[in-house]
Structure formats: structure tokens, C-alpha cells
Image 1 (tube, rainbow, N blue to C red):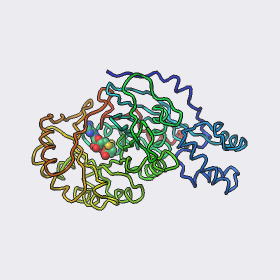
Image 2 (cartoon, protein in one colour; image 1 turned 30 degrees about the vertical axis):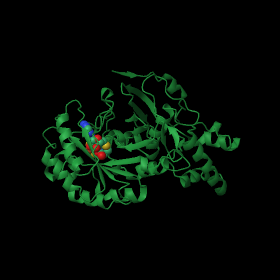
Image 3 (tube, protein in one colour; image 1 turned 135 degrees about the vertical axis):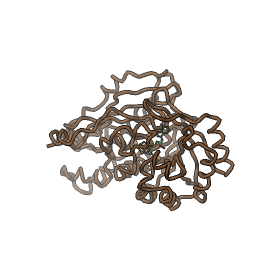
Image 4 (cartoon, rainbow, N blue to C red; image 1 turned 30 degrees about the horizontal axis):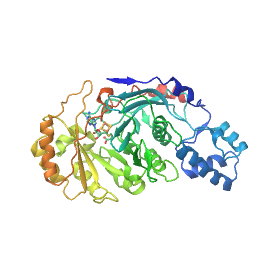
Length: 408
Ligand code: SAH
Ligand code: SF4
């Protein structure tokens, strides 16, 4: 059983998006200053105002320029006339019996407001002492991992840095995570009061995982910009140790992820032989296991305190034998690693079954005996279709001719 909330009041609170106004979300500080300079603000003042805006946007979560008390009225009016601090529209918000929340967010293309809006799913998973937000990087996915629901949706487009951040900010709004915010009062499992962020406050969202729709490393620049802003200490201030980026194995972007973003890495491994991984995770044909594991070994910042998580979906009679478990241990030798066993989450039309719990336990025993922590991920939010690999939206890719007609 799950409930769907009435969000009419949230719609009423949203600022009306204007197609001609530039969104400030997702701009780096120098870009924010440049936007002000472009509207006649002097360079020195623009840099100072960019810092103030940063604080309002990311630390306080303000969307209305009129509330920015330390900014003079003429500049507030200039900001209101030319810019927006937008939030995605909430199409639906569902709450699972286990407290997991799933939002369907709708975004308009900031550069082409005439294009149809796109929709993505974002999931919040409360747990004891922590709350994890699972964020999407793309609408659909170019990859076609055979056990993943998102993989059946063609890529519509990449999300912008502002849209990736928008998911985090909107979730913080809904969970009462900004100063003065109000926690949800729907009587279901409340957000935890875990300690998150670098200032050790009590937040509902303590961790962010790039494990929603899409392959984050195929949208590297926008994901990088969004995560650098989310981890900026003067803003949302999420510790990089509490942000995890999951990739199916886009090898050339693994080293830059460590060096330029510096977040924790998760690898969707799922198979220990190339012939099987070619079928399950087809990007393996391009970047086979040996190259992938070499990139992991060289991940910048890797240490026992900063291990790589290897995700392994448990598929009955496909990849779940004792021999697979032993080979997994052999493959990962020398890499500081955690192994996350994920019971397969079914979706309509899939061809797989989840391994029996006794099989998963046996597999975990072999991996544990080799000294690896190998938690079995408890499926969360299955009743609202919010578990790993179940996310998908109705957004469709336009034909080239339709797109040209709308943008031309
Ligand atoms: N594209 C990235 C991010 C998605 S993360 C990646 O593939 O890593 C989502 C995680 O859930 C990945 O490890 C993915 O392989 C896994 N997954 C996909 N479909 C699943 C399913 N049906 N059941 C369980 N896990 C699944
Ligand atoms: Fe894309 Fe990740 Fe799903 Fe593979 S598992 S289809 S890379 S979202």
C-alpha cells in the first residue's frame, strides 16, 4: 500500500517560470557574477553579490528575490525582472509504507521553452541515522542493461546542472531541510534526524547518490558542476564522503571523477566474466572488465577509508553461483572495496528472477569470508516502484523533424 499526496498547495507556492528569464541555479560563482555584469552590475559588486546570492540560493533555499534582505531594492528588482530561481514542478509524490518517497519531477528546457517538458524520478530513502536522496542525471539512458527498467527508455536528453541540483533543492524543500523548513506531517515514517553536512546539523537528507535514471558519466560536465555546487561549504554543504556516483563503467571518465569531483565511486559490476557482462551491462563490450578494474585501482583518493562500492545485482541462475562469488573475490583483490549485493527488483516485462534469499546468503558468506563487507541492500519502496532499477518516466524522444520545428 502507498499513498499519493495532494500537491495543489505546492503548485500554488511555485514561482511562475518565465521563458525569457535566465535560471540562476547551477551557475558556478564566476558565472553568477558574469550574469550580473551582463545586466550592468559593476565587476567588484557583482562578485560580492554572487556570494550573497549563493548563500540565499543554496544555504537558505530562497526562491524569491524579494526576501533577500541584504541585497538593495534596485538590484532585487533587476534580479526579479531578469532571472529566476526555479524548482521543478512536482507531478506526483508517493510515499511507500516503509517511508521511501518518490517524486516525479517535470522540467522545461531552459534554452528552448517551446520544447515539451521532460520528467524524471527522484527517490528519498530514510533509514536509521541517515536519509539518502537518489538523484537522476539523464531523462532515460543510452545504455541498455538488460535487467534495468530505465534502460528500456531511450535517452531523451541530459539534465542540466541546474536540473540535477533542482532535484536536491526541491527534495530539501519538501522534507523541511532548509532553515525554518517544516518536516512532512503525513504521519508516515518521518525523515531521520541524522547528522549530515559538514556543519553536523540535523538534516533529513544526509547522503546523495547519483543512482537514479541515466548514466552520470555520459553527462559528465553537468554532473560535475552540480556535485561541486552541492558540496560547496557555503551552500548545500554536503560532504563529498556522503555523495556517491554510480557508473556502469564509462572508463575514460573514472579518473576525472576522482580528480575533479572527488566524490565516492560505485561501480555497477554485476558479472565477473566478460561474456556474461557483455550481455547484462553492454557497455562492457566497449570497456571490458580488465580496463574497468584497472581504472578502479587507479581511482584518485582511493584508500581503505574511501573504498569503492561494487554493486552486484542478484539474478537467479545467471550470476549467483558460488563460483561467481569466488571469482568476484579474486577479481577485486588489491582494490579497497565494499560489495553491495542488490536483490533484483522486478519490473513489467523483465526476463529475470531474483535469487532466493538462501542463495544470496551463501554468496554473501563467501564474499564476507574473504574479508569484504558485503551488505545485502534491502529493497526499499518496491510498492511505489521506487527501488533500484525500477525508475522510468513517460518522456519520449522527439523525432528530429519535430524537434527542429519547435526550436527553429
Ligand atoms: N547508470 C548508473 C546509475 C544507476 S544506479 C549505473 O548503472 O551505475 C542504479 C543501480 O541499480 C545500478 O547498479 C544498476 O545496475 C542497478 N539496477 C538496475 N536495474 C536493477 C534492478 N531491476 N534491480 C536491482 N538493481 C538494478
Ligand atoms: Fe542505464 Fe544504469 Fe540502467 Fe544501465 S543500469 S540502463 S547504465 S541506468
